[in-house]
Length: 182
Image (cartoon, rainbow, N blue to C red; front, top):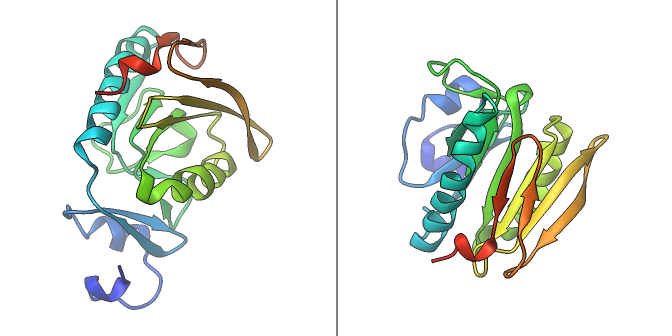
């Protein structure tokens, strides 16, 4: 989808981006340009909700928050909307969560948008200093946990159906892939 759809020329600022308000599609800001993806499927939503349910209690026990589809400012002009984030305590009245407050970011990989989650966002999240990145394959719930080393992520574990991810930081949680998929 092109930027012309929104009647705007040139790079977008964070303020102009936020002024778009709610849209039918997910609109993210990457380096001053808009990245538009279709609404998520029911399968994607169920996997995201199930993962959120598992992480929410763990986040609260650790004195953190679990948020869904919230604006995360990685830097000016770079504002993705991750599926889930675990954050340190934040101001709930601010329109965006700052990357420095995000301890874990989770994305449910959509088949039509896999490259964005596996390449672009992975690079951007690591460069912003977010320590943990969890990717979930929505077909079978396979979990790919990445930990940041410098400005890049390294895969720390792959958890397939039948196995259990023992997450120890930033929160403690046991996640079984088969508990995520419908």
